[in-house]
Image (cartoon, rainbow, N blue to C red; front, side):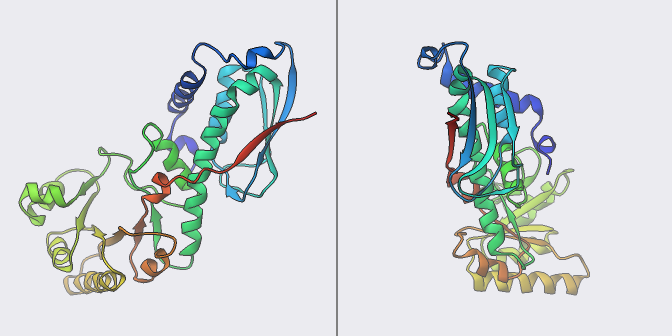
Length: 287
């Protein structure tokens, strides 16, 4: 996915501006100790194996501080990078580079961390028919950025927010009165619809009510396997397309392979974006 297909330039600019304002405010009092005319070249290293993501955020950080700063990239978003690999070289005012360093790396380490975690999950289930999905469990203000990072890691974006897809959960069903009632109302909308079920009985009710995408919440692998069989049998008996099934809950790198083997179409992983493992980057001035 191209970055601007998910987050446009204006949105990215605003994210960077907010981060810089938070950090610098009235001025970088430490960088002011450096001579104003001091020019440097700095190399940005990665200290571990990772998937790179966040080039545009780093570049925009220095651009907002000083358009004369030059950033030369030696790797691209989605690339696997190795320990001690130089990912970019930055040249220009020492003061400006020092002032923007932390903000720039914060974006890069966060988004690369999300992309790397996603790639780890994708690699574990390689060869299965399942796809990895993200969730709305994101860092406030960085949802679109993190969802872009998920795509860089090979995952698929679930709904972006509450506005682009209907996801009927337990409390919605309770308020509506039944699975059938909730689905009947939702299917009249011109939006994708998914419904959450917690038992095989609820799965059957959802299928009979016309659900085409069903979230199987916190089911064991044995129950997930039965759910896939029930879904396929319902499709054959009623000559309709099989519903897409999504497994959710208790998903980890240790459990996901077994979940994928059940035959579900999607596995949603909240940990892609909420259990952040930032990638270690280091900026070094050349002597």
